[in-house]
Length: 77
Image 1 (cartoon, rainbow, N blue to C red):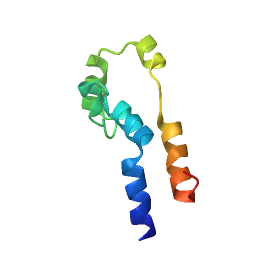
Image 2: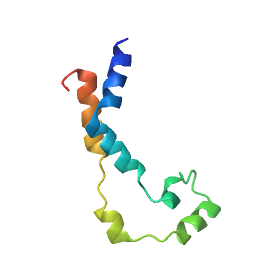
Image 3: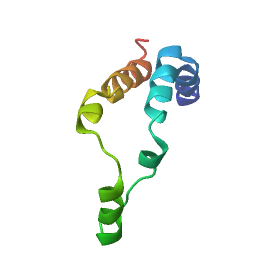
Image 4: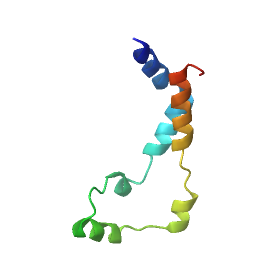
């Protein structure tokens, strides 16, 4: 019951939902996990149009999402 309530809080938290939407808004060609790196996968990576500056500028909201999740689990949010 306790975790069910925590899951409800997580799902209803607008900041968490915003972060999840931001994480999920990646370019579709980058959304598919690459899996084990083998020659066909390496060839696929080589064909991706990767802009290092763009990738470096992209925010990585995982740390904030992690903190908010822990806050909910510990009952401080």
